Length: 317
Image 1 (cartoon, helix red, strand yellow):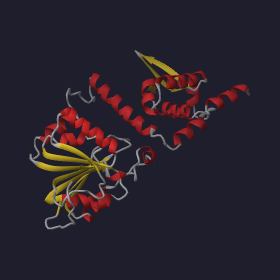
Image 2: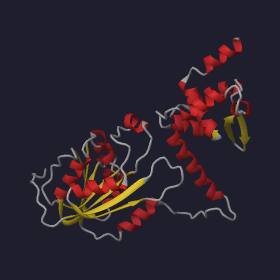
Image 3: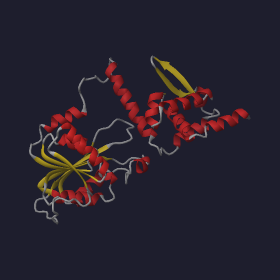
Image 4: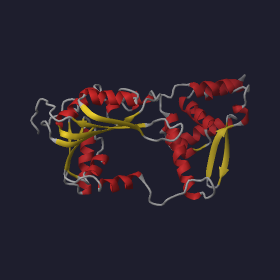
């Protein structure tokens, strides 16, 4: 009876239950588990030691790494812990652990590809990265464009856009992120980018002020995405384009509280309807390729600002 009471006390901690669910899904190192649950490594290691001593978690050493997984007894169908493991597997992912686990596994596979050779293995190409491709593609874009980045966040994308734009303005409602982006631009010596705190639903720019509006991973955080796209159309010069990147529908409910997402993504036809409703023509929508079981997948869309469309003019600050 005392042993049973001790086990119940052990499982009365939410972090230990989170760790148990993770190692039931995948064999992981303490460092990987620390990244996923966003805790201190010493704290995570202490919890793992307690689960190990209780016979729930096994250790496996491989070189300088120690991997953790469920013990055969804990993972056995019909065993004393089968019910608990099943409940943990089906529990709501309120902290986003399962989503971060997918990122960790993807990064591990990419690292393995760098060091593993043989038939069927993806070749490792030194220097290949999305950032490098983004910079290269900037050279193909007509220079001299006036660009608006809605929901610019920390400004990383905005500063990449500055490579081809004559002027790029990043707008975000978060004053701390605007300050961080401004400091980053100054640090990198980028003079044609500026950042302003503002409401993307009511932009303080005159009609036809920009040649391109970028809305990257922003719509899902807005109360009124249709209004933001209408504002994008208003500030675009006739014949100019809007570029939208956002998330496809997903089931990661934790992003509502942790990341303040207002909705769990948009289907391709929803994005198309929003753009057409805002007055854009020539709308094209495409799903971006993603790995199987990726928790977040991306949809990409473009639209053309109709010639002759009018809007109310605001005074640019």
